[in-house]
Image (cartoon, rainbow, N blue to C red; front, side, top):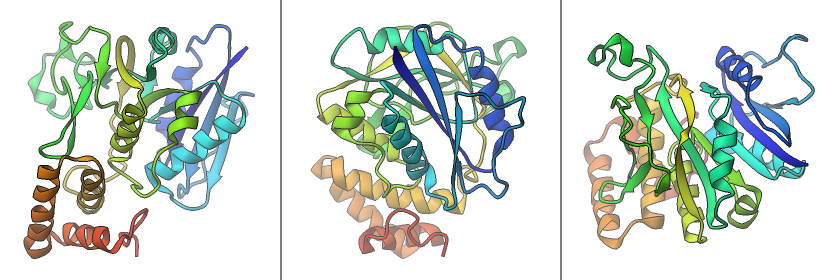
Amino acid sequence: MKKFSIVTLSFNTEEDTKTLLKSLEKVKTPGMVLDIIIVDNASKKVFTLSEKENHNNITIIRSEENTGFAGGNNIGIREALRRGADYVMAVNNDTIVAPDMIIELLKVLESKKSIGVVVPKIYFAKGHEFHKDRYKPEELGRIFWYAGGYTDWANVKSIHRGVDEVDHGQYDKTEPVKFITGCCMLFKREVLEKVGIFDDRYFLYYEDADLNERIIRAGYELYYVPSAQLVHVNAASTGGAGSSLQDYFMTRNQMLFGMTYAPLRTKIALLRQSIRYLLSGRPRQKQGIKDYYLGKFGKGTYFT
């Protein structure tokens, strides 16, 4: 019997994690052993489950240090592999899984040997859209957060196809994509063993794009599976757009990712941009650029 492991990261968002667990109680995994690993990434309040909430297939691993999105997920993925998982799904804790999502993802993942990772169609949870006043009441719950994606190499950014659009069936084709969001990634074991896991240097932001690139360059395909569906609450645990945390990690990690994988023309543009940030960027952007050049990755100097 094959083993299916789900890894999720909890950081000061206990209720989100418990909502995810409730949805997982209804998930279908016929013919497989389901193993759920929760990594409590140094939350202020230690994550626990009541006797009623706890189940034999749930394991909580407490990290006394905040290791970021990359490091926290890696703790869980390593444990899943150690336990012999045939499949590992890393999923955000602020999500709700449809009962047949895993079945639909596995159908595609196992349809071709070349497919290494799959991702579902992802909707905003009702009331958590970026532009709440744009939609009719009956459209809520059908607003895309992600419907496939790609890397915009000119600007070194990961693009979510369909974001903010209402689902009218326009992205209902199962197909290869060039970017899979770290919100939900289902891997074959062999991919993780061959390519590795998230790069701890990123800590937060671009770690999914980096892993995508390594997987593609190892000869695997990434697939978007619209018949599999996930709802994303989109919790703002990182402070949201324009926060100092985002300024620092997005700026530093864009340099790390771009200078590793981007075409030469883009690398030259990034170097010029880094000079502009050093001269006139916001304080945390300047700090991020300095740390990139000094090789200060992971947490860097943001928390010092």
